[in-house]
Image 1 (cartoon, rainbow, N blue to C red):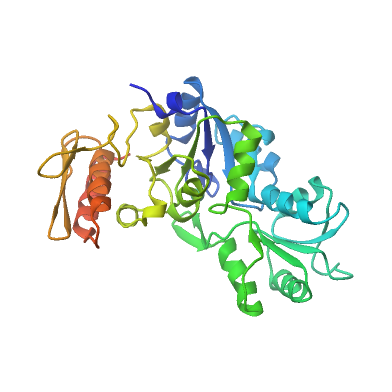
Image 2: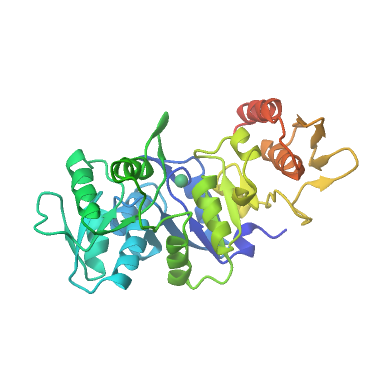
Length: 344
Ligand SMILES: [Mg+2]
């Protein structure tokens, strides 16, 4: 059996909802990443969250039991600053909106970060990223600067962020506030699903066979598809079973896992004719003793006694094979119930 860690040389790992949620480690994350490294896989941490500099992210990872160095962390602030230094000469002023990671990334490429309140003239550009302390004055300064001609790069447009107990507004929600005031969106977006951050991560690691690992369909998985890289969706973040079964064709992962232990276990492919994909017979799709069938546009699942992820694999294969809309509600409930019974 070839594991994902054996088949792919570099994992491009999302963080929020994959390795940690807020302050806390995701169950199985440290163990899963250690096992993947033991099998020869390199790890690069790729985050749309622009607020913290790479060294702070690496330190957080080490606190959670995941060995990590700053050079193994690629942020959307860095990708955003890389876009700006291609357009503007070194020394140009850039209005920084977001946490300290935004200023540090601007400074690191040779541009000059300025903050709301200390803007003497219209800056060349605005780099807008997430920060817990972003205030109305920051959004106001950005709006005024952009209206006066500053080039507007958003680090990312994630509308929500996972927090313990639910979701909170992400950078996309704050970008939308500025966009509402201006009547238009950003000139460019660096983070997933746009290609700048993914390309920067692949370039940095010299990956030959990278695998994107994430928890969001519309950023991680869509971003992987944009740059033509295979992807693993882990079910520890914002995507639930029903959401995955309803995924748009452009946002469907190649592999799914309950958590990061999936990297070092037998792969669970969602489609295709590989050994790790559900097998098709005249009644439906099967994997282990899990089965799914389609009846009059309704998805019916029999989870069986094996790992719940096998039932989800079969359900994805069935739901995604249909040309029209599929009613996945009852199947999703059955899989979620199996997941609660057996745990991850
Ligand atoms: Mg995430």
